[in-house]
Image (cartoon, rainbow, N blue to C red; front, side, top):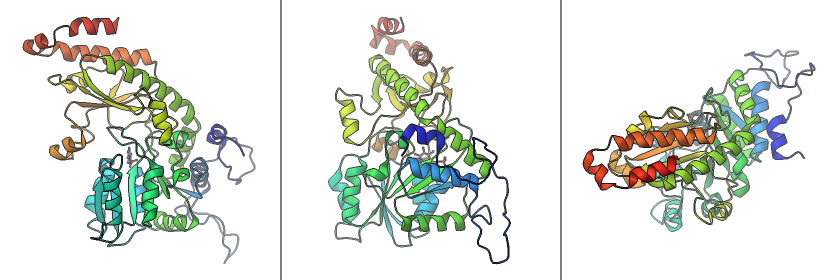
Length: 410
Ligand SMILES: *Cc1c(COP(=O)(O)O)cnc(C)c1O
């Protein structure tokens, strides 16, 4: 048995050619010949399966310690396929801070289709979570719990082990979106999850050049149900994109190591900055590493968020960044910054946003693999611009900040 980093590079070969090519070929064939009438060849039509997609699906199943993997045209297509294994009337409990597109798919599409949805905080109130799953005598137990390993953009850590133990008491399936964490930092199936989902667009592909989704199952029964959805709903990932994700996965560990190191250094810098009110990055406290380990995480990943102090305009900070690009998405080699309230989470009504803690002052960073000093200097000069744009009253009330900023920059 090879180890994780070796698996990243080699995957499980699909023996389908004898050229000796070290990379699996991209098969641009929509159909495959039958050797004779009545034969059952392994590949017949590319929606149902093809060797390029097989490679990626086996690769992610191996890395997530699952029975089978499935590749989809996007993260949302993957989520759609997974949720379509349920039936009208079934109830799903979802985290109250899941990716906006996933929430909208559940709330605007699947409720119309007959699923019932209960949302609840999955990271700290386990009694409430249990009541939501059990139905508390008012309604039947939920058929599934759906949440993300680390939430976006507040970076709360969900304890897969603990949530799975509660869910399984009521026979609910545990569906985990592992996009922010990747199998390099946690394998949710080992902690009790039944299905793992990825927006492979993010860390797995890693270069902001492909939209893709992946699913891994813990059992053959679930795999058969999801294969039906993949083949019949048809939201499959084409061969060239499968290959782009495969290649991205080969460098996952190298990228993530650098991204985490950079993110931790930036978090420490921001914690000390006089214009910063709050920094969200898992494991920042003194016992941080132990806290992460207790929740089954080997690291905190490369995304963090922070709030600027009242009166400081976060848009001025963002508009003055040069190394960080102002863009949604995350997990790629280049650093990105965005304003959740007006970019990724603008569809949430302001009241709902504030209730879950996404304030107007919150900035999210996806940290890339650049030199960390360039990233820190970029943030420093942008914060300085925001300070200069404060009106005089505010600047007086923040007296002393000038020297503090100067000492941080020097
Ligand atoms: C981006 C994202 C998705 C959606 O994936 P797409 O590839 O954009 O369809 C789902 N979940 C999380 C956590 C994401 O970040």
